[in-house]
Image (cartoon, rainbow, N blue to C red; front, side, top):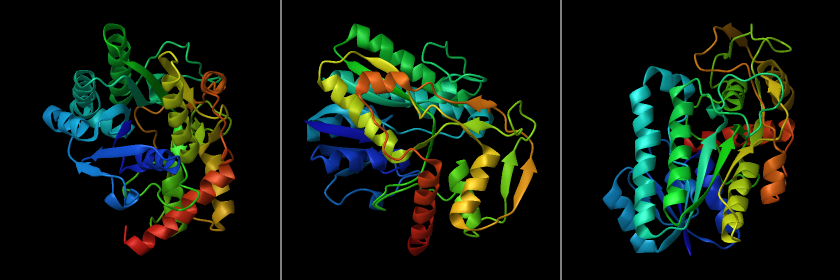
Length: 328
């Protein structure tokens, strides 16, 4: 069996590749390298540079390597960017996913893992959000991902294809062994930007919104270590291999930290008192987004191993320093 990992040279995808290879799985990667890096992959993992929206190309890769399963990470992920360019996001995240799923069905793929997003829930507040809550995304990014969930649900009824969609919360950190991490220089993730600021790569850190109805006025998010997230996707694959049913699950720790709290932890871990600047709210950002995370543990047996904010920040900081040697 060979697992096709789309977007496998990118941030989350490269961690999935490592998790699979570390246990001896056969893997092939499709990535268009718009935000990925070939050096993020182990040297023995084949990389085919191309677009998952190219049906003929994707089918050829599946045929060449005898792909039996797909783990789909290729996507555009910036919420403000989706508000500014909705058609681009619906094409990149929805239309291309449809093409990939069609190729998988025609090839005979039986198991499909989809990296979805907590942005499908929209502007929720208060208690941690459960999978039972009806999705109400407030950004084209969230809607583009929800449409792919809908496609998978419908296709799993009509075809012999089982799927798991993991609604990922805020991903951060880097591989504990230092093999890969978040490498795109223009990333907008809070912890990535904060450690870049601590290292002097940015003059200041913008705090987008300090008037939210939260404990300190800044947004609250559930931050998850990228290695724990990759392992959850592997557990999802094992669930389907064991004749498990199709599922849609949250993937977070079930606790939230505010932006200001994260900044304090980054300053403490790095030892740098960098400059922050208050800025207006960004369109599409809910005040609070925290997972109700009991179902993924019960269904998949997932057990996080890196679930402290300090460890996440420290891993991100180590990785950011290592990027200096690559001039990234």
